[in-house]
Amino acid sequence: MPSKAIISCAITGAIHVPAQTPHLPYTPDAIAEEAIAAAEAGAAILHLHARDPETGEPTGDPEVFAQFLPRIRAATDAVINITTGGGVTMTIAERAAAAARFSPELCSMNMGSMNFGIFPIAGGVSEWRHEWEAPYLESSKGWIFRNTFSDVEGLVEMLGAGGTRFEFECYDIGHLYNLAHFLDRGIVEPPLFVQSVMGILGGIGAHPEDLQHMKRTADRLFGDQYRWSVLGAGRFQVPVTTSAAMIGAAGVRVGLEDSIYLRRGVLAESNAQQVERTVRILDELSLEPATPDEAREMLDLKGAANTKIESARSSVGVDVG
Image (tube, rainbow, N blue to C red):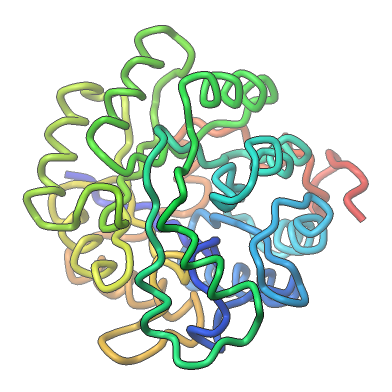
């Protein structure tokens, strides 16, 4: 059993809409502030999406990422993890654009196409803030979140050429087998950072037996070649991450991308609140949060200095203004 666990924090994502909570960050300033505070609270990895600064609609535009990535890099040593999932309405090229430009230490990699249903959220919203929100949610009844074998292989080859490694997001058991296929072909290399995503409509559920099934299957497929992290969507965030930590997960993920609540009926006012709660839970389990450098060692990352994110502590960078 490990003595430390990597806490990842997903700051804003592309699931929730501003009408659900006033605390969802979507301006570059808010995303940067939330990310820095989450790192200070104990998150070793910051999982980052971008949103339109005026409306909060998800965007893959690297110019928007450029408004908050250097600020985060300058203020914290946390590992920056840039999404390639983006939003399911985006093309693969749009989803990958920021990771391709900034060559981060880590980026997400979705391991299979799936239905991705967030339309039930609309039933809980009484007043919309922006015109895009309701159609965006309701249209997910007809979405297919595309991640074909050729999509994944192309992204891995393109982004991996710069030394970026991957958070392999697995929403179902078949996604683990997809990842095993790429491992067997030598397209991906261990240690694999496997993120089990539990409780999304269209993917595996969040029952304790689902969690055990994920772990047993990953253990059988990957043995000691992987590091396992788990997130629970919505109300499953605390029970799933706690259960995962109890059975030996190397990491857990929290953040407003995954749940907008701190506890039943109480909105989280910040990502840092969820990280602080997770640190307390880990402490009760005799676990410590891993530092960013410990996470880098566990995941065999290339180091912040080898990214293309402008940093006050790095001589390596590009003009991201």
